[in-house]
Image (cartoon, rainbow, N blue to C red; front, side, top):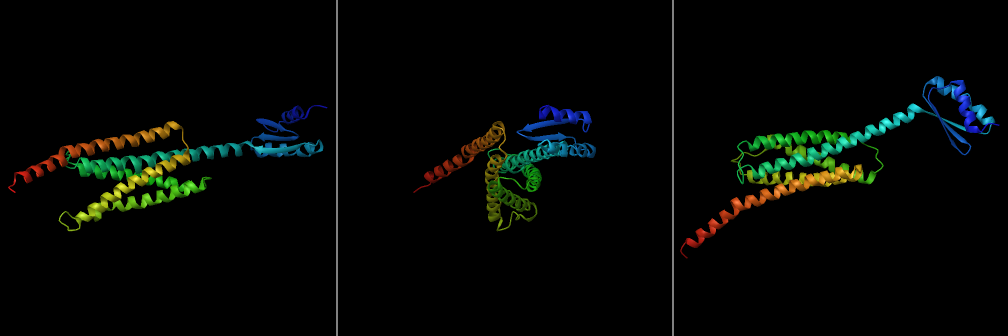
Length: 259
């Protein structure tokens, strides 16, 4: 008697039930992978009684089912990658640049005439990109990492809500001569810093979920460290050019006054 594996291949090939075929053996079980046309699947199923008489277990899998699952998996991975890149750019990178423009280029240590336009443009661009990332993130449900995903999603929703509130500053900010202007500025600045801090936390939570290649992780870390170094340099420059000279001037004036 011919061995089972060559015999089945001979039968399938000679009857021409399908153009592309593969047969895998595991003990006395056989899995036959075929293209998904009705003719091919129906033809192969006709051989199941013969296989049963010979004592074989025959399993039929349509090739397009496997292909479709692979395509869906790849599509979901691309969405996750897009979500990560857009989130990093929209919630982490651009808002940090916008904050530095406001703090260090309004009057000191460097003066940028149109700093407000630049600040608003960067923050609006960040909000738009971040919102797109947030929408993609909401569509990525059903992950196996439920506990991690839950905290990541909650922080993401919180970031979106607070960022939306922050954007409303374009319409509801206090006027320059308003007595509440001081408190409004404290609220606006504090909320901006809090948003960047939450974004950094959520970026690392997202990296833990995606588990990208080490290169991606270190690129993100490198960019964040670079931003921190630039902010530190500008902060030191601010103190050297403004705060310390002003403090020394006040001390000299106090000493020059008669006791």
